[in-house]
Image (cartoon, rainbow, N blue to C red; front, side, top):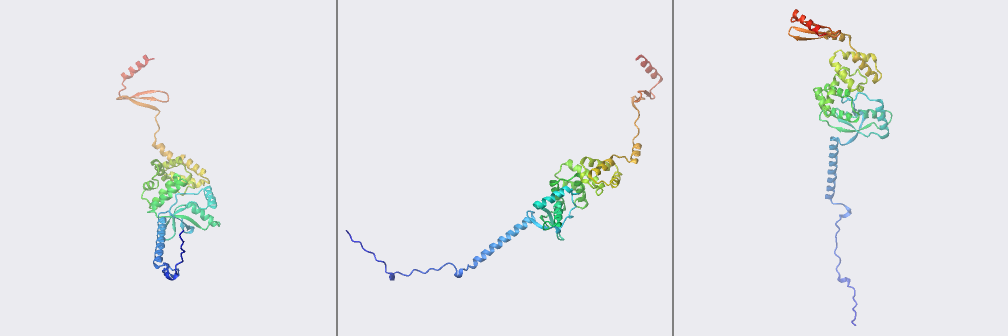
Length: 336
């Protein structure tokens, strides 16, 4: 059997020392300056991009921001809603107390400071009332718009109210008339086409008919939004035909002092059907009394009248000669 040889450990004197290695990390844990510069540049770029995104979102109306109620000018536009129903406002107040503001208003920044209200008059009014009662922080959630011109602002207001609550024909006609008065549009036709362009032609025609009613009674009516389509069209037609009807309607409203919408509608209906004394006289002069007989020509120079009361027949004309009368009498005698 072969002998095993014992291996002895190597002599450490013959081994070289391990090569010295240098750490890549700077002494004291400090970072290289280039890394700090790159990090700061990246953070700055991210903040600038975020700032641009927020500015673009505000400009495009995609960001909701809280604004002080005191900075909102409710009279920036002539409102299309004429009056607030008590029950509607109470329901809105109850909702705001329980759930807070769920839908933002729309505003436009004004050159002299503050914001002009485009839509959301009811919400602003309700929030201001709650703030006066000690509820809320006196701010309103809003979207900042940048309408190209005043017509865009009016259109935004009308569209929101048409979708949310619906406008009466009187309110639609009134906002068109007021927009023309404010110089937003040149003519009522232009205002109707712009504000109610999505409506049917028949609907715009009815709104146009209500313009006469708005012109004659705006300010005299307490419940104009309650005037229905049929009565409104009847009053408008009467105003166009009768120049004195507007004054009589205003006088009747002032004298009657209606406390409810029903009472006001009754005054309008009764005044509309009443005939003015002068109108009755003019109609009698213009319309001759109808004759009590039917007349027609039998042939040249000979006409006949048949009386409606007793059936009497009369012949007249130069062609009725004695000979013709005699022959007619003979014929009548033979026909008995």
